[in-house]
Image (cartoon, rainbow, N blue to C red):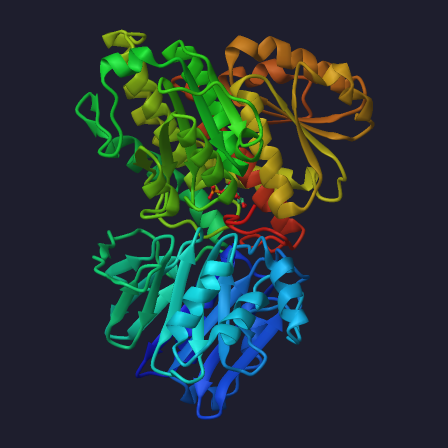
Length: 607
Ligand code: BG6
C-alpha cells in the first residue's frame, strides 16, 4: 500500500504535502517524492528511503508553489530507488502523477508505447499511466485521464498534475482508496484521513469515478464524463492524536490503549443485555439456518480469526473455519445463502481480503466485514459491517485493532449463540459479563511490562524461536511469533504444541528459546508435557500462563503469569499482551524501526 497526498490552495504546498506524507509513512516507506507546479512547469523531487531523506532535498525555493502531489511508496514493481519513486512525469513534462495500486497490463502497455517511441525512465507499472495521459492529451486533461483509465487493467488511486492547468488536481479511483476534502486550507487529496488533521468531512471516490479538485470546489465525474453529485461523510471524533503522548513509539502507546479499544468495541453494541449491530442483523430463523461460518483475513487479523474460530465453533454449534484470505480465493468452497462469510480487516483495504469477500459474494454467501476504518472499501462491499472502535492505529504491527477484532468476534459469537438457541439465558448473561471484564484483564496483563522488558534478553541474538500452544493458545502463539518477526526481524515459528514431537522437535537444541503459551486448564497438562519434551533437548522455556497455574510450570526456565482470568475461552486478548510486549522490548533492544518495520506496510492493497 502507498500513501498519496495532494494540496491546492493559497498557501505553500510543500508543508502540507510533507506533513501528510509523514503521517502516511506507515502505509509504505521505501521511497517518497512530491511534484509541484511552478512558473517553470512541473518540479519533481524524489528520494529513496524515508520522508526525512526527501526533506533534505527541499530548499526554501520550493515554497512558492501552492499546488502539488506527494507519495510514499511500498514497492511492487521496481526496486526502491529514486528513479522508481513517485511522482512519475511524462516524457514531455505535461503530466506528473502518484499512484497506489497495481496495473496488471503494464508490460503490454509499455511495449505499445515503446513501439511508438516512448522512452521510459523507470521500472514501475505506474509510469505507463503518465505516458498514456500524455499520449491522449488533446488539450483536455480530464479526457486524457479518462481515455487512459479505459486502457488500464488492475487497481489505481491517482493524483495527477497537468502542466497546462495549474489550478487543479485530477483524481481517479479503481480498487484503491482515494478521499478528498475542502476546507479553510483549500483542496485536499489523501489515501487515508490521518494525512490531514482537523478534517470534518470527506468525499470518497468510488470505483470508476474521477474528480477535479480545485482550491474551493470539487467536480465529480463518472466514467462517461457526466457530473455526479456526491455528499461528504462527516468524520466522527477520533481518539487518535498527532503525537505519541510521550511514548517512544506508537506501538507501545497502542498496546496500552488496548483495554479501551476492547471495551469501547464490546460495549458499543450492547444495549442492556441485547447485542445490536447497526450494520448487521440475522433473524432467529436465518441464524438457525446457517450451515457454515468462514472467518477470512490476513496477518494478525487472521490470527484473531483463528483464535475466535475455536470459541465460535464451541458456542454456536456450527462448523467454523478460519482461512487466510489469499488461500481462500483459490480453494473450492461450498458456499450458499446459508453460509456466513466474515472478513476481518483493520484497514478495510487489504486486497487479498477484498478479493476473497468478492468471491464469497459471487458464490451467494452472506458477507459480513469487521473493520476498523470507516468508509473503507470493505465497508461498502459487504452485506453487513461491524466497526471495531480501536481508533486510528499507526504502528504497522497491529495490537489494539487485533484486540478490538476479538471483541467484535466474541460479540458475534454471543449474538449467534443466542439466536440459534445454543446459549441459555444464564450462559448468555455469563458470557457477556466475562466480555465486559476483558478490558480490565488486558489492563492487568499490562503490569507485566517490566518483566517483559527484562525477559526480552532471552531472544536477542537468537536465530530461531518457537512459540507453542494448543487450541486458542496455538492461535495466540501464532500472533506472538508474528509480532516478534514483524518488528524484531528474528525468525520465529508458531507450532501446535502436540505436533512438535512429530518432526520439528528435531530443531530443538541447547538454548533454543521456546515460548509455551498455556492459559487454558483443559490442555494444560498436555502442554506441560510438551515443555518436558523440549527441555529434555536443551530448550530454554518461557511459559506464558495465568497466575493460578504458575506453580505447575516448575520445569520452565522463566514464567510470565498474567492475573487470573474469568473465562479461559476468552483468554486471548489478555494473553496477547505479554507476547506483544516481549516483541516490543526485543525490537527495542535490537534497535529496530518498531513503528515502521522494514519491508512491511500497514495494509497491503495490492495482491
Ligand atoms: C499486514 C499488516 O500488511 O496486513 C498486518 O502488517 C495486518 O499488521 C495485515 O494484520 C492485514 O491488514 P488488515 O488491514 O486487513 O487487517
